[in-house]
Image 1: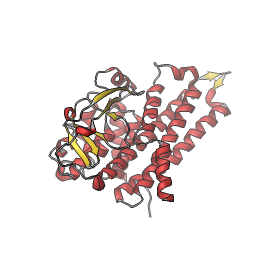
Image 2: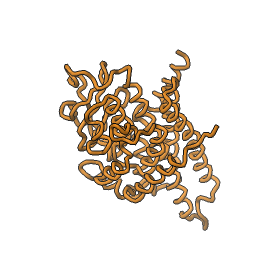
Image 3: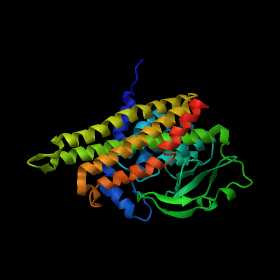
Image 4: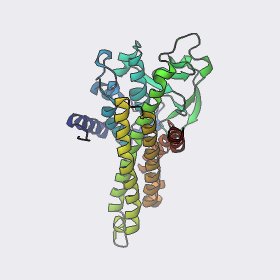
Length: 333
């Protein structure tokens, strides 16, 4: 049995990575923090043209008909770029929910013509993407697709990540008298697991990026006549971060396969992946900051863009403690 991604999956990942490298460098992420929307402005359209936004929608709904195993690599690349767009909420959660319910907005969402954001149970604070046409809100009877003004959105404040705009949702008034898009038992749990898995994939990408930034810096920073990366203490810092990454990444990939195959162990596998990916990203952020020293605290330096995204995502869609508790409940009953 061959446990590896296909050439097509890797090629698509590389194409998205190249696009993001060209269209979403750190300067674009920095501009998004200062903009009124928190978004890039142009990258979303490019991703729609590539079919990335509709990867999990069937071809009949204008999507590519692919699976979570195809999407996980792409989401990892969006994490590496710290893409300030609602990729997880839209592509990993919203589009498959709408497509599965045969909602009339599914094809438009798959093409990127409209943006979808989510407010599911255990997701954490709602991050409202400016320009969203639909908000998928979970209540006790299921998930409702409503317009932003019907969701009772109220600004909560800025996240530590300047491109994430936080809102609260008035769940009590959402969907009153209307049937949900999907019943809770049928699809809400899967939607949450897809959100947690997608966030874990982005955390893996962020961990890679912080390691790469730090390795590059320690090769150039000279102290006592030689690069600080040659010092054993610095090597140990980055080795620990690399080991954490290598433990987290296989769990994320396995969880993607389990979600795609609809295995009974889905919740446990997703929780193990999210917990490990959160820990890896937080560790990498700490070690990167320590190796950079005072430079790491500078807002003019790019490291903080990736650290703060990692801090925000580590707690989104359930933090490590929440997911470990879910694994414990599954094991111990």
